[in-house]
Length: 351
Image (cartoon, rainbow, N blue to C red; front, side, top):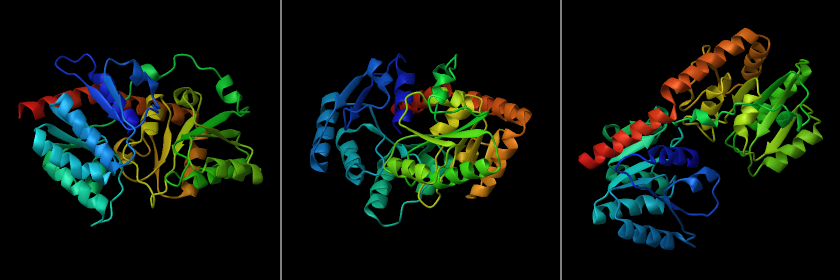
């Protein structure tokens, strides 16, 4: 969500007639590039929901914005609050927090908050068609604006020492990046790694990301002596690690999480890497199975078989990677995303 928001802000900087301000709940910023942009950033550390709503109300009164674009995901207090603020101050309201393909249980507080927010919103934006359908967003207000990738982020030179630092000396490198929690299927990723070792495939598996289960998985890797897997923890050089990889994977536990259009998939394809990903959500909206990557069922054995095919066929890896990069250039570039939001903002104001 933060990556999407920053790409939008960055893309709109310098556009005629637009001034931007960002309201955030914490002074912890994962993507520090936003600090170098010519925008106001307002930090607030409210102690509770009441204080948060008071802060938001004060900012609306101070800035008097034409558009409020909310990226809040599953915050029922704010979802009930924004419709009231819109009624009071008359701004155009964009509900932009639809980011995954999970269905919210009916008649819960979050469900009611989202329905009210949809009703009040002038536009509902998601980064996938699957997300809008899963959340039951009103079609007349719904817009799909895919994540934009800035190709300037792809490193021009790659240093193999980046992966050698983890002890990687194998012929091939596979990378999966995401939160180390129950939403990503790290168990299946470890299964694939173990099967690769049993099949004597000369491949190392990088597991990139941080999360509540990181220490648990590190311990499991050591206890089971899985020597071809390295959990790297949080990294700020994901693009370089992807560039040094031969194949990327994103395996997901569909019972806990359904992807919208994953940033990691977009980034991997932009780097010309074939991706193997679990079917579900918006993943088939970017990966065409058998043409620029593989979409597998929730089946770890199938994921392994697909990986084995790619590692044994250099021509297929190259062809898939070329097509993957073309797909991102055509539909998922930062320019396409920026133009889409710029057009939407103007449509709302003119209307």
